[in-house]
Length: 260
Image 1 (cartoon, rainbow, N blue to C red):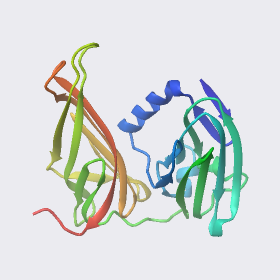
Image 2: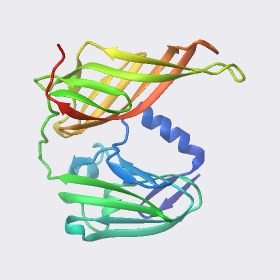
Image 3: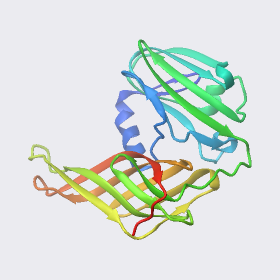
Image 4: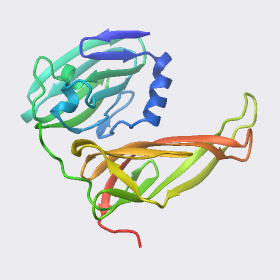
């Protein structure tokens, strides 16, 4: 069930679980947002060149918001707090509402600058700030050193800024036994000792580790990365004996140290 609005699209609660699973397996949304109550918004990149938001077949930057049923307002401000766009709609369902950057800025074109979008539902609101960089801008690579943050993920960026090492993820796996079987959880830590390459264009440097444990992320600024981790067939002490773990993370640069 889908309801279309002028500034975006709405995913009903019936497809919400699919959207969350997709986010956990692919690149996770950046969480540079402040929110209160039932409204929670994020963007899959908070610093990007114009092509990422406007050119077909390029990486698509979008805003995703968890909203309740009811009246919703969307306000976008630009430099010096000037209002660029506002919209209002009534949501018949609780779920995920999404909008691409060009729709957020209509009728204005996507131009370089700093922006903030505020989504409000009742007494609750969520704010996300993002920066559009000029075409041809080459952002700085991720800073070398130790990174950690939410999601129990940590790693080092090598001095040449081309790899990450000592990637560690503290996970909680849940049993995947048949219906009615005993459920349980298992805690553990996965550590990838071999280097993992940092790839992709300068404005979207990424890393990806695939296998029984999958961890991938995007460096959206030189000091911040966001991503997701999943693990399959993790040993648990009940049910079928195997479990599944997943999680999102936001890691930030902490210091210039390197592993010994």
